[in-house]
Amino acid sequence: MQIIKRLFVYAMIVFKSRYTKNHEYSYVSRFFFMSHKMFFIVPCLEYRIIMAINDHTEQLEYETNTYIRSVEEEQDKHRRLHKALSINAGIMNDSKSSSSNDINDKELVRSTIQSFEHELMTIKQACREHDSELNNLNQLLMEQAHVSSSLSLQENELLLEFNSIEKEAKVFEDMHRQLTQQCHSAEIERSHLNHVRLHTSLFDIVVDTKGELYPLINNLRLSHRPKGDLQWTEINTAWSQATQLLMFMSNTVKFVSRNYGIIPLMHCAKIIEIDSNGKKVYHHLGVDFQTMDKKTHNTDHITTSLQVFFTLLYQLSIHIKISSDHEINWSIVPYDMTKDSIGPYNIRMIEENDETSWRGAINCIASNLRWLSTVL
Image (cartoon, rainbow, N blue to C red; front, side):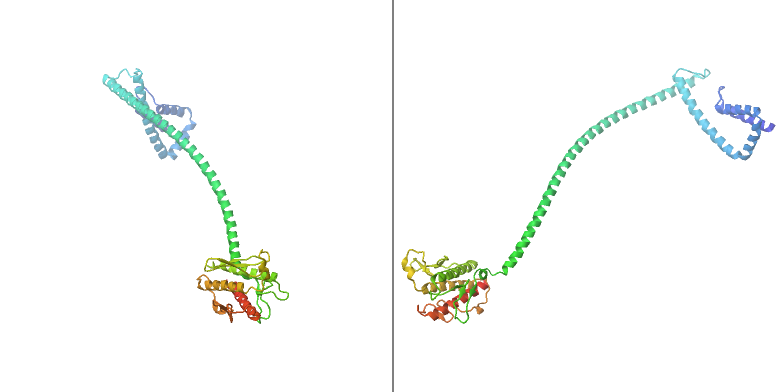
């Protein structure tokens, strides 16, 4: 125990000599001094200290050295700061210092003050620069806010315009769909109409192949004169239907005769002929009972008018043959036609009272008229 006490006393003396100057004790020396007192006052601590020293000698040595270095650094910093502040305040505790040390201390203080002033000026300049930069940033921020507001307005306008365009696009899409459906329906209808023979639908011509019956157009008998129950009223209507069919076929193939024109009146159809002198000659396909000329009411036949009708039918056939728009197999035409004849009958040479020849010629005209209506 005496050895341990001597060790503590020795440690206290060593630390006191190293860390004490001008009768100033550090808290480390005071710590050892108080520990020395406690060591002698409290006997129970001796055993604990002995055990700690025996168990953790190396750790205590390392921690003690670390603590000593930290204390030295802190004391050195504290000493320099305390001396600079003491000199600056005019307080000099050490009256035994030499004049050379005073000059060094004043230089130290002056350099310290100059460094502080320089640092303050630098800080002030930095603050001014920061204020200027802050003002610039605030200005930029205001400009950015203005730009952002303008962009927001433009974005809203664009959204409204986009919404309007989208609505118009939907309307256009609906309209396009409807028009597409209409076009499709029209195409289907056109396709169906291509298979419809308009002429045969409007004009139904029936011809007796044996030649015993009158040819019919829409159930009306075609003849050159009245006989028995066949009266002029039926003949007028029948040849009016025939002239309408001839006119419709001419319009289909865009045929216009140079010297003949058709007036398809229901009560009595007429064909206008322009002769070599440029005069108009009217050929009635029947008896026009509505005319004021009573002489025409006593007409017995219309053979001359039928010759003109045949000539107009022949001109239409020639136009169809030379037209490139219509490809027709003329080898299956019922009766061949020339300028003056159809089949075995010469229209120009038949006598007015030749009932059989005129019935056969009208039969041939009706057959060719029906065939043309089916191929156009």
